[in-house]
Figure 1 (spheres, rainbow, N blue to C red):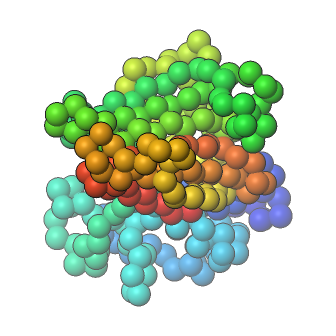
Figure 2 (cartoon, rainbow, N blue to C red; figure 1 turned 45 degrees about the horizontal axis):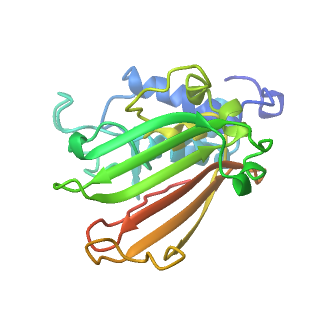
Length: 255
C-alpha cells in the first residue's frame, strides 16, 4: 500500500485496497473494538491516496458493519458480546447491511430459495447481454404464510457480466453447485468487493390483466428491479410479485 496513487494496479480500485488493509487491521484487532480510527487526513497520508478514496473505503466498511461513524469520528464496531469490555468511545448504533433475498432465515419452513440454469424470457436476453435462448443463472425466492398460501414470489436473472465479474457466483455456473437452498444474501456486498459501483432502478405497479388480487381478495403488486454497474450494464434483473395486504415488501439498499 505504500506506492503512490498513480502507480496503483489499474484493475483494483484504490478504495478497495485501502478498505482491505483496514479490514485486516480490524479483523485481527490491531484496531481494537470501540477504538477510534485515524483521521481521514492521516489515512490518506498513510496509503498515499486522496481523502475521497479514504471516504469510499470507510463507507464500504460501514456497509460491512465493521465500523460506525458519528460526529466524533469513525470507530471500530464493538458488539455487545465480543468480550472486549465497556468501550465508551463506541456509539451503540445498529448495523444494517443491504441483502439480496434468499438463504436460511428464522422461519426457514416458510421461505424457500433455489437456483437453476435456464434461458431468461426473450425480452430480457439482450439486456442481460445473452444470445437468444442462452441459459443463465436464475434465482427463485418464495415466501409462504402459516397456512401455505404464497405471500411473495421473486425471480432474478443474472447477466453475463455478473457471472464473469463476481467470483462468488462462479461456483454456481452451469454444472456447478446449484444448491436447493442457496444463500445469496451477501450478493450486493460481493458486487462491492468486485469493484462494481452499482445503481438500481425499480418500478412498482399492479400486474396486467384481471388477476390484480389474490384468491383471498388482497391486492397484488409487482416490482421490477434492475441493478446495473458503472458502465450501465445490467447485473441482475428481478421481478417480485406479492400480496400487498399480507406481506410487506421492504428493500434496503446502500450503494
